[in-house]
Structures are given as C-alpha cells and as structure tokens.
Length: 408
Image 1 (cartoon, rainbow, N blue to C red):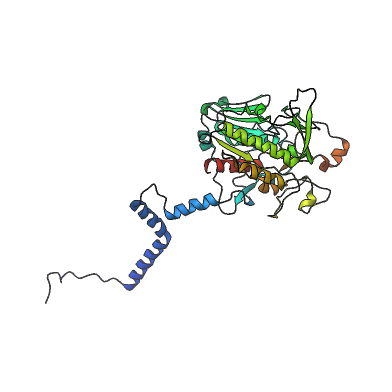
Image 2: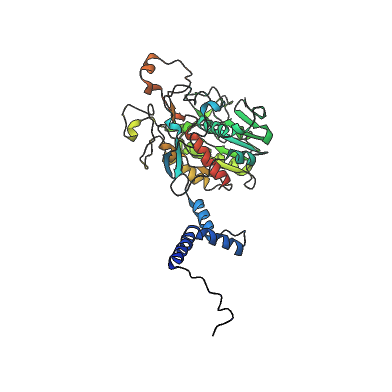
C-alpha cells in the first residue's frame, strides 16, 4: 500500500559522495577541532578563569628561565635600531663609526630554551612609563644599558619633545609628552668612593667609604623603577680598601678586606637602602649581574696571545664560563638578596654574555689618548674587551629587563 508520502522519492546519494563528505568533515575536525572546542568552552565557562591549555602555557612561561638559552642568527629583526639613528650613543660604543669592518655582532637574537621572550614594544613601554621616573645606577656598563634603552625608545618621540642633559653624576633623558624620565646616575661602587667623579675617575688606589650609600642614595629617592649594577670596580685586585670615617678626616682609618667581603658589605648596604626607601607596592628594583670580559682567548681555545680583538662569532660551548666572572660574587648576591624584605629582581645576564666574545668594542671606539706606534702595530694590546658595541648585546639585556618588568 502506498503511503501519502510515497510519491516523494529520496534522492540517491552515491557512496563516493559520502566518502568525500566524511573525509572533508574529518579533515576540518583535525585542523580546527581544538579551536572550536576552545570557543565552545569559552561560552560555557566564566571568562575570568583561564582555560586549562591556556593556563598550562602561562604556567610554562612563568616557569621558564629566560636567562638559559642560546644565540641564534636573526638578520630579519636585528639590529633593533641603527647606530646612526641614535645620537645618544657615546663615542666609546659606536663601533661602526670607528671602523669596525663587519656587522655580524648586531645580528644575534637570544632564544631561551623553554620559551620565547616577549617582543620589545616601545609604544607599550613608553605608555607604562608615563608619569614615572626610571633610574639606572652604577658604572659605565650600566650606562651602556641605559643608553641602549634610550635608543630603543627615542624614535617614537618627536625631536622637540625629548632631550638629554647631564648634571654632574646624573644624566636625564626626558620624554616630555609622557611626563617621564629615564636617568643614569654614576656610582661605580654604589657607596661613596674616591672614583665618584663621572668624568675623571681613573684612580689607581681605589678607596670605598663604609656605610656611605646615602651620599648617593639621596639622589635616587622618588624613582619608580631602579636598575642597579656594580661588580667590575670591586675586582681590580684580591683586596679592597675600606675607609672608616670620612674622606675629609685628616687622619684616615683604612682597612683592607678581601674583595668578596667588601662586596658583601656593599650589597648589605644596598638592601638596607632599598628596604628603607622603596615601596614594593609602587616600585620595582632590579640588579644586573656581572658583565663578563674576554681578555684571554686561550680560555675559549683560541690564540694564547689573543683576546676579543678580531672575534666575529659567539662562543658555542654552552658550559663556557670565563675566569673574569667570579662565582663567589654571584654567591654573595644570592645570599644577601634572599634576605631582603623588598623584592630585588636579579637580571642574570652573565652566562648569556659570556658567549659574546664578538660583541665588545675592541679597538673600534674613540681613543682618549693618542696610540703609540707599538699599540698600532699590535691591536690586541689596546683592545677594549670590557665594554660592548651599540647596537648589540646590551639591547638584549633590555629585552630581558622588559620581560621581567612587564611579565614578572
């Protein structure tokens, strides 16, 4: 018997069409299934709660040691700026201007093993610095990092709305439209010393005054972000002269301490100053670890008579650690900072900088004194294997600072 609907015949669907349709659905599920499930979960769960996969990625990022990694060539994103574009670089650091024949040292990007660094966003950082005072305190290496940061930011600011001035030990870069300053204060020991003149400080018999951090510290008060460093000036020998009393005393009481003990004294003074002057709810404090030197190429298997001169590639040995970087000092920092009541974020740039024997200014810098014929005949004899070309390695230090500042 025919039913009322029997006259409506169903169209036949070929088996080949069905197979094609099923294959298409399966491929879409493979390609987009996770995204679709993620969107579905977003509709069924509270937005403020991160999804399991997203949460696991965030946790992985938080657990990642950004200071452990390797250098990779990246000519597409490096350098972050051109040397000629930044008028604030001191002539001691302008390697291209002073004849360096290659630019390979500018083309390396730091890649952490377990994650990636957030891309440095100058617009974002300037907005975050609006109405704030950011201060670098330390020696010429910290000044290099300071200048690097200014170079990374200044291009977004119109010429009429920015300036840089120096007042004794203090250099101030002003971003007027943001009501912000980025500053550098010369204090190579952090404590008062006989090397505190920002221009004339080449003193052979260095003396540091015990308990004198407030002599400089009064100029740091009111900073919202401070980046400290001090290391190289403490290790010119095995001991350090410490003054008890004042530099104005006619009869001076001076004691000699082992360098590590003298350094501990300074770190304790720093922690005490931070605890008394920095509000952890409103401010951030950073300390940059020791910057390595590359004065003996035999340490990385090179010429016994060589140094950083003519080095054009990084060291590839992941375990390389130069003799100039004293692990005893790193230990002191860890012990003292762990007792601080105010958090001090440690920028551990030492190991990643150890690999960069190629990034020093070497002979490609302004020479303050005329070179002798002997020096000219032997460039190794006057190569600077302490400071770094800009643009270069110290831009990476600031990328790490950026990561720790905004993605702590």
